[in-house]
Length: 412
Image (cartoon, rainbow, N blue to C red):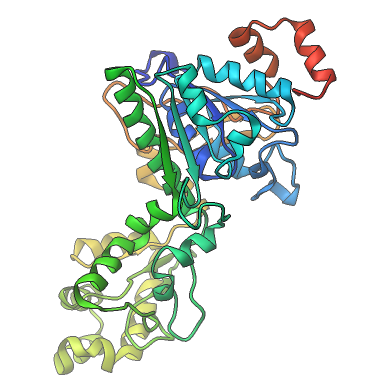
């Protein structure tokens, strides 16, 4: 935890955000706001955000307080539990929304209205309120009510048909790249709407559709769509690279157990690769066949690449190649990233203690501002950890009032 967090410039300090999101996309939106100073009140339904049940978990122990995904997505938030299916729960949420500057929600379109909290009514009650909805397909259109998982988003939204090896099934990028990007887009849209509200006094409902955010940019989609629009070209899955492929290059094991990747060596880089390797067989292939050696002598070149890599630690190989103008990089896994010299030098990893998960390294700021801007003030909340404090300070409820609500299972 940053000891001097209180001295840092927090650009969103004073912004009150009611967080009605679950999963990945919505919580990543509110995380960006919280990490830069907003006061974010995360409201979980009884049982908690489903992300608490998504791994990875340490030692395979699926403790909902130790989900790495939840811990990452919910830093700097206060956490309360309110049942929106109970009339008194709806009243609590309506009261909190009336005091907020921003409400962010990620439920299926129409859910807030079914609970008695339609965005238009929330804005009518507080005219400068910004309500952001982060959903798979948006608030309108024929797909409006459809659910979406990450692999569905990847398949529907772009060139999954071009991802992976030509002789295998199509694949998506690992992790939650599409949903993370949707949340980051929602954060930018929310801030734009909030700027408008502060300038003109009028709030609005911001409609963010994951399907559209990743169609426009994630993983080459815009490039592929433009290529098709202009030329009619449909990109196909490429042939493999490396020892098992038809083109020289790929991933190679190094002396320290690390791995480097050359990717597919671009034509302009072949001669640089030959100079760096200083291997007689590669030099001969280059002399005889020029750039065609990457196809004609792929097995010879891959064997030389394997010998060269196995004689060097991964980072030494990377530096040697890059010094010669040949772009080779280390293939980092989580362990090597935690020890990456550049990230350590910039102070990217921040240690913080969670009451259940213990001391862990957390990702630092995605961007930096002069004077600070980002700070890890607290780790993700335990389920319902701040219910009493939030309802007391924002709604003026006393301990007896809160206990009565708890007895009716309205809050936890």
